[in-house]
Image (tube, rainbow, N blue to C red; front, side, top):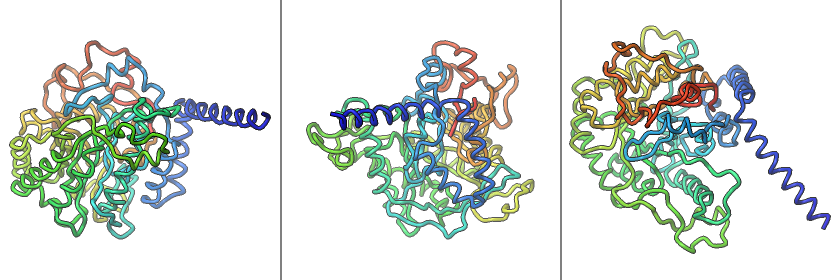
Length: 456
């Protein structure tokens, strides 16, 4: 009896510690501590790729801040939007490239992102390009990478997604034994690519088939500058053929929020459940298919992309990937390194291309604005340029809080950011406030808790 009492006390103590740590991670002091720790790590860990891996490992271990306002109904009303037919609790997500292997999805969603995009994932494992292959340009708040689709492969990433879904199924009662703190139901997209030596159509269709049962959406990445010949797939004929094949592959597989077949997992461990047969809850045609494009396209190439997207009724476009351009204003010592440039210098060119594509498609295709976002003002500029959703990533390399504190100043009636359309944000826009104006407190975090002092 004493042993049982002691064991019960230990379990109770561990449970209390777990909840205490969770609550602490949602506090401003913990966020401030994270900020100081990040600054120290930047000084100590000078290799950019090592710092990246360390950041992912820390997030996977649950050491990033937790957004304490996920259940705030006022903010939920202010931020929710529906795009591609999917419910987004916030229009701000984490771009592909940070959690390449799907190792930290739940903690990143707990940090407050409305959606997390995993990848890029290739069908077969591959190491990517030789190191060093990632460089900080601190003077420019920028990063250059030439990773080259380093990937654990589709099978390994799909296995992690299965575990993520099984944890969610347990939490919602679909599987007995719900965990004390279920993973949040933000959305998870999967960014797919081709192997260096692979056939493009075969590789992308294999990725679509593999991830259709798990992904809330799938992004076809044809715009990385670090895989030879990849950007040639943005040509009109090549892109049309590829996207038709991916759409056909998607339709072959049941889609979405997979659950264990009834009775198939009774008495099994979580790991056993992860390998059990799954039954999709939603019918074809499957998850939305997006395409991610380059900021370096000519106007003619961009017009071709718009024509293909409209013709095939592609669900959405992410604008944009990294750039091979090197602005003369760059001051970082690594500015001459080969690879894709991201961060602050990418904001203007990517927003300009975003606005152009919005005009070319007549607003009929949902767009995700990515590239150089590091503040609420910049996120709002992407939305004013035509984006329905916004992604960030490189800002995390320099700010654990993701972006500057505070809400954006309301624009004057005749004012609009550079490279954007002058019309005010329409109420019909998926990111416009729903039903009623949010409170001032909600407006301070109107895009994402990171902009108000939280974040991973």
